[in-house]
Amino acid sequence: MRILWAVLLLIGSNTFMTTAWYYHLKTKWTLVAAIFISWLIALPEYLLQVPANRIGHVDHGGPLTAPQLKILQEGITLGVFAVFSIMVLKERLRWTDMVGFGLVFAGVVVSMLGKELIGAK
View: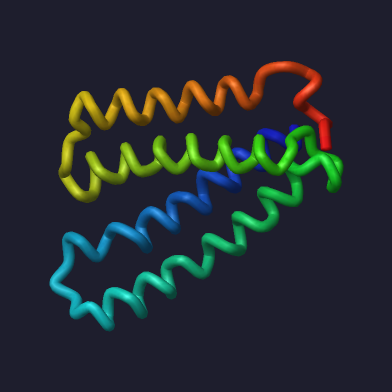
């Protein structure tokens, strides 16, 4: 159950961060306004990211090591970004993008494999 909460919080945090990093590309904001507004959007990201890592990490009762949390977060980031790119930016992913994303997802799977990795410090 802790891993589910960690994943849900990571999805939420990545949604805020992706919006903060890329939404301004489709606006007419000045650079200073884009930086300020992006910082405001990014603030809730930390309110979700920190608890996600705490809940998921072995030192706090979770099933994952820090490297596993990081690679999981990267995979989630790409999934959130793919949806954001298509829905908000109106940019389709190229086949090369999808291959690159697939390689990162393969890394997520490799990192999660093996009981000896889960709980290892």
